Image 1 (cartoon, rainbow, N blue to C red):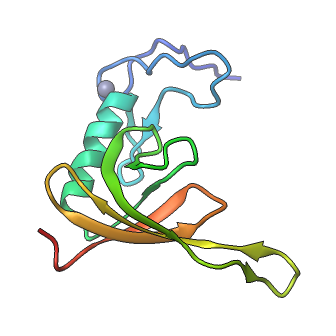
Image 2 (image 1 turned 60 degrees about the vertical axis):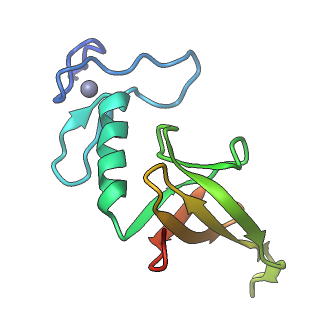
Length: 132
Ligand SMILES: [Zn+2]
């Protein structure tokens, strides 16, 4: 079986980002388009650049940091400016869920709106046409 040396540089030229003990992440990110591996800092820079030009973007909104939209590595992409939770909706199987609606503003001044399920961390954003 092949093992990967944790100190082997990634495709971005840096070693994997050191992780705190007990973390489930590996310290490396993989570009979904090219398959290249990157350390977290490079991945964040990459995500920020994509976000700056994207019309739609899926990012994270967690209970621990309800005021910011982040990348999966935890880098802040935008500040939440409004947050609304829908009434509970029941599913045919007896479960229920709530939808969360957010508005957010990025550091470059662009405005976004998005929605996601309240019980998971993913939020799907769209750039607001009327922005600025
Ligand atoms: Zn790097």
